[in-house]
Image (tube, rainbow, N blue to C red):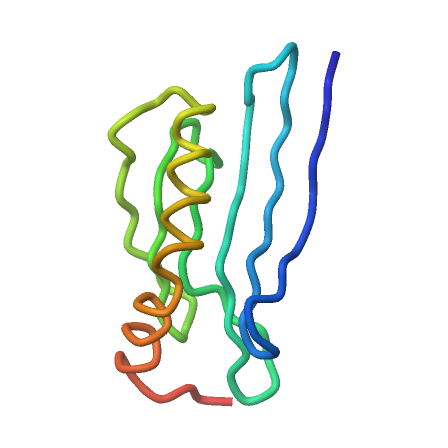
Length: 107
């Protein structure tokens, strides 16, 4: 049985957490969780965890959308998703500070 879960949580009026994952028979088969902030009226991704390239990893993004990819310590997608959720919810303010300090947004 396949179960898909999607939701958004507003952390502040300018910050949000987006979540999407798919489970088959209780096992996560793919996921994407992302923290975004609003800059100059546009939602920009700051940090994203996903399985897009066939492995669990974190992308730290800059204001131009360029990313630095870091593989996760585990390739068990259930464990990786739990880690990703916790990291973003615990550290989004630090991620935001880094993102905003790395350069001015060009509209």
